[in-house]
Image (spheres, one colour):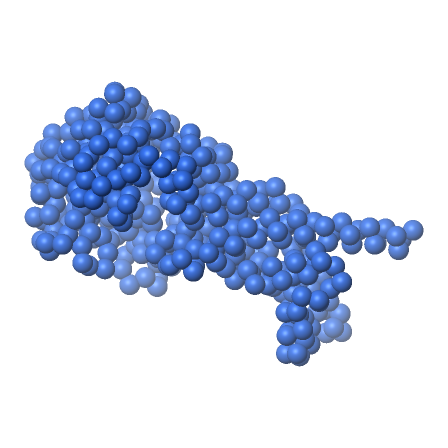
Length: 385
């Protein structure tokens, strides 16, 4: 009786695994391939647009970069954010948005200016959303769907997580430890496609499950925050703090009251920073009752420090981790961990290679799985006839 139940449960998981793979194949393949591209997007971007990476060492005051970007935008966009290079060899980036009110959940047309850190020379200006990198980001982030695309990607992550776990259950041989060792061998089946499916699925199962879980986490931050909040040592940001209920994108002020150089000076003073502290990111104020700049500083400490500077008065105060919204994951440390785990940033080349292979796995597993399914149907049809 126990054996019958075991076979029934295995059959149920096989059906679930089959219909996820076959039914969602068209969606999971572009999601995986785009993810693999984005693991190496910085390196690939240098190959696609080499002129943007002809840089010299050094740095200038932030106003020098912003003034050049304003000239490059030529009235088509207003600077919204200045990003300093994360490492040598990368350009300064100034992101700008058109001065129009966007619809809820959307952003207006944007332009990015790439600048030489050492000289401030303009290296290029374009709308990155219309370039290859932007299109791939759009595929991976929301499947090119403006409405509900992010939720779709999140549910695809849940489906891929279920597929990974059910696949491992199906792969696991019944019997003693020796049977498990036998299951690791290539010749487990007479079919090349079956062996490729089993071997690929087993060795990539855990990384693929991690990617799927972290992807769903990124897509549903409020729900996932509710799960982890009781175990976090510091208060993480809620939905309201992350801007989940904001009516829409608010355009940056075309002419702030303060100059960026003065804002940076106020932020450094307020942060009581060490001499090694430097600017990482500067977000310009937007319209509203209390327009303010956000300055992200990096130094010898374990993480960035975010300082909010009131536009006009110059009053500055350091924001705690739960309030600082700059960067992926905002002020939620667990969300930042999940995002870095998902994109490979900060965990070394070995992890990047592993998750790159995991991104290719849905294509290999989907194709081989469909072939196995079709072969089984043909065999069943012959027996029936």
